[in-house]
Image (cartoon, rainbow, N blue to C red; front, side):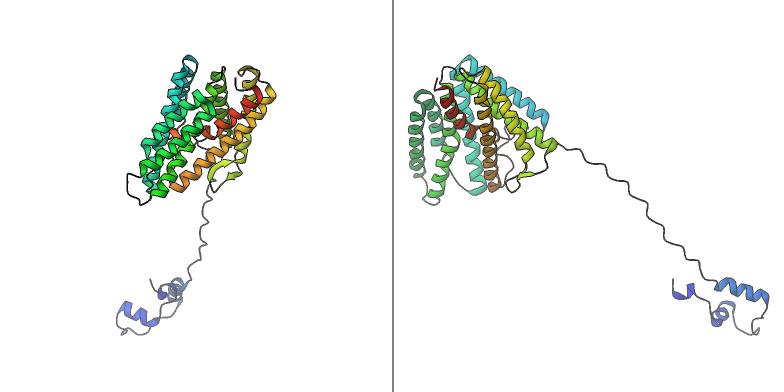
Amino acid sequence: MNDSSWGAPTRGDYAAAWGPSDQGPAPAGPAYDAQQAEQTRPMPIVPPEEPMPTPPTPPQKKRAGRNLRAAIGVGVGLGAVIIASLFIWKAAFLGVITVAVVVGLWELTSRLEERKGIRAPLVPLAVGGAAMIVAGYVRGAEGAWVAMALTALAVLVWRMTESPEGYLKDVTAGVFAAFYVPFLATFVAMMLAAEDGAQRVLTFLLLTVVSDTGAYAVGWRFGKHKLAPRISPGKTREGLGGAVAFAMAAGALCMEFLVHDGTWWQGLLIGFVVAASATLGDLGESMIKRDLGIKDMGTLLPGHGGIMDRLDSLLPTAPVVWLLLVIFVGTG
């Protein structure tokens, strides 16, 4: 379509349309004038249609970041195994700790090799880790430290059988793994060695789980202010408040009714410290996973990730609870 379609046609255009002009000029008169007026009348300007208003998008309901059904099912199953082994036969619970430690070491060393090319030797770590658990139960803190030193030495020697390239980073990672997983876990074994060891361990586990649950529930429902966005964007200050409140309430109940010679105010303090240590432990593993560029340490536990994803808050909390219980009620 060109510009002439919107303006008045010229006389030459009529001649071309009606043939040669041998009939003379077009007659003037009302008929012609009416026809010309009809053809030259400007087209009405139609205002553009206004777009229909877009209905507001309904707010999206918050979703949990994991499969809750699987997480609850796995959690209940693990809880049943732990409770049964804890109160039926202490040696069985030592076995549960040892299995968790060895699997955790396998997950950690596997991710280090996959993502960073760091080959921390697993065999001396697994053997030394199991020895630490037994030594901590039998000989206390002194036995745990001796086993830790021997494990570090075994890592240094074991790695000598391979190429010297990367030796320093491999043994450094190995010693770190030995301290991070089995050595911190020995404090659970030391709690178990007390006369009321089952109650102490149960208190430790309940406070840590309740702290994590309170942080998750309150943060998911009310969380708005980020706690450490560069480390773990999902954690909020509101969630930390929920962890503190839940852990303090659980601590007061556990110290009053589970631990011998314990009092409720001691439980309030222990619960507060557990919420802090569990949060720091979770953030610490988040730092490791961010450095490795992974979301979970493993896939062994549906809805939870790997064993290390469940031990992250338990491991740094164990020495804290052990120490506070020794201060408040003695070694048992």
